[in-house]
Image 1: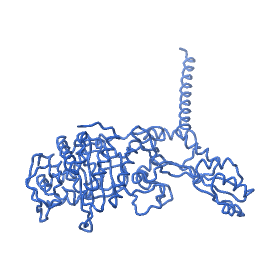
Image 2: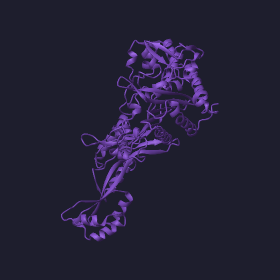
Image 3: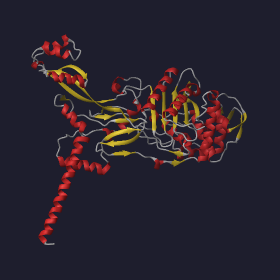
Image 4: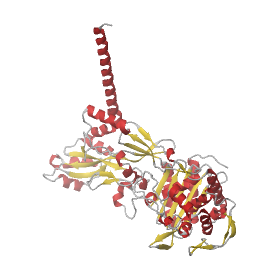
Length: 571
């Protein structure tokens, strides 16, 4: 091949590469114009007939996904319009009022007063107009009449999942930021930059490529693990329970014990996310992750599991229940002070016997008890759930050499944990022995069009032997089938494992009188569970025990979940 011909081929090849690159850039740019930035350009177009307040404010969407894969917005953006007039340019006050009042309900005297002001260029006539009304007013093309569009954070469900979602407020620099819940935790994902659309083409292009290469893009929407149907049912049951027992607070978590996905999380009373400024007497913080409580007898499940796991006891182990026992000079007694004689381990769970727990803790030993509760179940740590303001459990008493501290911890007093940490620990009993990672976001949908799925399987750690959890499933199923409400809630075709707890509430170095925290934890089906539920009822009135206040809502939820998740019978 001649030198001239070679040069010609090389030039053609270079030209082909350049054309291909340009083509790629144009396609890439069109993708961003038509797909990624479609909504933003649409809002700019809206700005051609309205004045825009505070620029084009935008923020990512918080989605929930139902069991059919449909996305439902829990937090989104909404345009609201304000009708303003410039009295200087109004030609005919009566005709202007007449045309506007055909669309909106306006006070004629007030309108005339504002429209008659001399040398006044700005009077607000109506706020929070819908887009439909704004469109109708725009078409009138009235002199001196204009619309101001404001983009605002909007929560379609009002109080729905309020303690999970959180809200957007202003920081000390008057910037809009997420203040609580997911709005705060995922601020870096949900926020949107204020940069204009009309930037240099190549600068924008390569900035976007940089985002994709680094982490898929820094901004996006988030999709939750919460099932909206489960969340609705949970919130209704909690509200009904709180009202019935006049409790200070009723709260609950529904989680998949196999992978840590939170299917429902709610607190009653909740609050209206769209009107949080008027809320009184309700904390915005989520007590299920930011509050610690002495959780009572549901912790007996963990104590029993530890004893079985290390071989300190077995199913056939018995002890002489004397009704009370002295440990380090302190009297530990059963809830009813009754002695039951020689009884097996099943009775410790079925009758919630504190003396039985004292016996088991003595067999386990302080070092083993501490190893499981602190090192393996990590009840003194934050779980790392993707919600803000999580706190660690209070386990200082387990640093003591006194046996009494370990005995009381064995039945859920003297140590305080977050509900999210407790449901994680109990999931290790439910799922065959693994400590899992609770989480509430399933994936991030980046503005670049890419997405990131969260997978926490590699964070599972074994805590209990499978044989241990099988024994516990059988024992806790027996509690539901034979003891809970005298067996009246037994389900013939489904096995359910559960345990109640009634805890004294700490107060100024002692405990409150006649004030309790009721807890209820359970999972189903017992041997391959698809859900685990933790409920708490703070200071209910007219009931001494959790079995009285929480059995019905727990079983209602269990039945709903079996139907909703289409779980096949297991017996």
